[in-house]
Length: 487
Image (cartoon, rainbow, N blue to C red; front, side, top):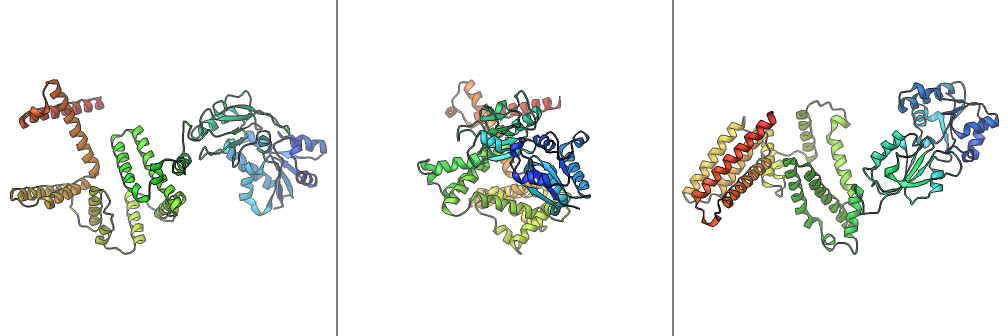
């Protein structure tokens, strides 16, 4: 394999050829251009420097990935006969150059030059830092910085870029569009992101410079917006309440927001779920902001910790372990966690569960730890028998005037066990029962008002009549809903 020198031809105008590029092309034994649809091709012809292009590969390749691979392979084939110069507009955004480096890195040298975005930014300077990406390889993570996009060669590609950008930038964000042209000085059209795919003409020389909207005056926001918002609220002159918070004062809100998110999920109210998960995310960012000020942690520490944990515990994805079923993955997860904790007895594992966990959840996790070593009911029916037993013991304590709280706790614990063996989350069924009670009580309330009665004058027997009616109405509604789902 002979040496391959990748020469940066630049955006297209001959004045973008550097002295280094001119010298390399003049000395080259052979010159290969990725495409002759470039201003440098005319300059080479004027200088009497022969060249070949890879344009024939464009029509023979079904996609850009295939084209890049075939181009790299063809350059390597020709380099077998002697050293050559491979001319591309910008090696930094050229996939065929990346393939060349992967296939023959030590034999490839890249001669830098004027990049594709250079004339665009010269014509329309932007605040730094800014992002640069070619349209075909565009990947946007946030909408905080100016973004320069090169090689917008078709309306379809412009439309694809626009859809991705609208996830982070508002439609009305200022956009400078650069129509087709290879001149040393580029002209631009001031417009908006919404108009990116509505321009008269496109080719490989087209580009765009997109400027972000004003902070906290946007239609869509991303994670970095949340971080900036929290920094703004806790800055001097920000919100007095937000500035006063600490890790300890915020702890209760994290639990509350997580519970509200879980409730919204149980209701399958997805708009509410997005809203409540936003509250949970805010709490994480809030702790990161407090942590940065007090030196306890940063958002980077939080993201690093969870990524390391997930990679370490997914050995079947990031290691050599072969796991096929969710049950195998769960067992492997527990084994890895046990190894991280060291040799703990089942009782020690139970003791290590935070007392601050919601009581039903802590009971569930204790029971799961016992079940893993074989101390468990064979099925839900056995656990349900224990519920009846505990209920009778509670009744006995109450009838004999003893403190019933111990047996009441046992009853709750037994009910959690039964729920677990039914593959049902205890909090979920309790919430469903609470919702059912509220619905039935609301039905009673409406019926009492319709009968022009007042709550205080109702006897227990009266309440019972209304309760039975509400149950019957609830059951009729459930039956109708089932019939609708069937039909």
